[in-house]
Image 1 (cartoon, rainbow, N blue to C red):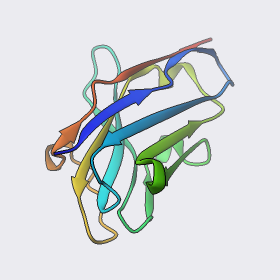
Image 2: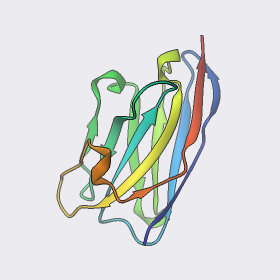
Image 3: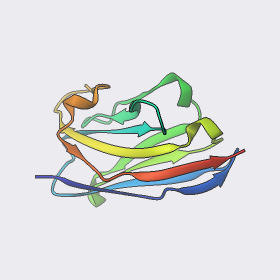
Length: 124
């Protein structure tokens, strides 16, 4: 069983930065971890993921601005968000699923464990 807790959300001006954290209870270095977001009135979307082997995948809209990393010694995955835009405003969720390969799913249904979410608001 893996329990995920996100933190680091908040209000930031356009062009600013935030770092989200996804801390896990339980051993999850062999898990793929992804960040999804859901804006008001919109469907949940894949943002970025990191495999158990460290491979990373980004959706086009955040490439060059967001960076995902993991510290397995702390059972934590980080999402560094820079050059934030108002369209990045959403609730951000981390999710985890066992993966022994480079594979990172972009479909939320493939993830077993989810955090409660953290809100990110980018003002213009």
